[in-house]
Amino acid sequence: MKTVALGRTGERVSELALGCMLMGTRTEEATAFTLLDRYREDGGSFLDTADCYAWWESRDSFGGESESLLGRWFARTGSRDDVFLATKGSARLASLDGVWGDGPGPIPDAATRIGYEGAGADTLRRALDASLRRLGTDHVDLYYVHVDDRATPLEETLEALAGLVAAGKTRYIGWSNVRTWRLERIRALCERHGWPAPVALQQQHSYLRRRAGLDQASIVDGEQLDHLRAHDDLTLVAYSPVLKGAYDDPARRSGTPTMEAYEGPDATARFAAVDEVARETGATPGQVVLAWLLRQDDPGLVPLVGPRTYEQYLSAAAAVELRLTAEQVARLDAAGA
Image (cartoon, rainbow, N blue to C red; front, side, top):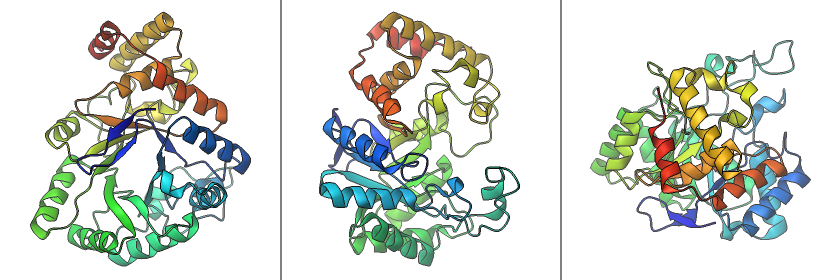
């Protein structure tokens, strides 16, 4: 894998980031270790996790399984200093009361209804210390506010994050699931007070475009892309780039919670364009999408893949070698209703 710049930090990270969300729960340890080993062999260096991963896989869990597994992998391989490690805080559930019903999974609106721990100063300090213990390290390279917390003054959150940077517990900060106007307010406060500003923005972003009229803080829109073009000190880390398999499985292209944000004539036209290029190249549609994202430079971005299986990782990693022609890229760019 090639490396790309992370904002203006001087850091370079692998062009494909590896999401570790399901490691330690749905992806059992032996498979996760094999997957992590292969990612490093392929030149991958950008690992992503969070303190809440993956609470929804167990009735008595607040999360932490992914971080704990990574801690065991670091201890086994001694590779902590060879990777750029990102984790997140603020999105652990405040309580497990009422999260689970009679079915096999949590109640769909449980997180929204019950609420997250949030980004208060004491919460973030306590959360990062707990993450470091699970990860078996004295610092992370990047610490995100996982879910933007409007109930806590931004000044409180940013001052606490500045303290974590000053203490050496994280080298950089980032934000996720946040609207553009909030990013600009964060930037202004950091400049005014001399606090470290975010260097990474983790949002959902793919080849499909969100449907018109969608009120959604987590999915990149045109205004956010424009903001990123104007501020190259902030790198987009694009999560869910293959939309949970929707490109490769026609049955997932409609009627799923993921597709609610995209369905419509524009998505239909974009799917058709991806399918056409996939036939021409002999690649899967998902690989075509990742290859297209890897070609984006205005603004630049880092796709974040979260494979559950080793085979899913191999399929995603193969996109790094897929070379789309300029004409194919132009055709994909132009597709839409």
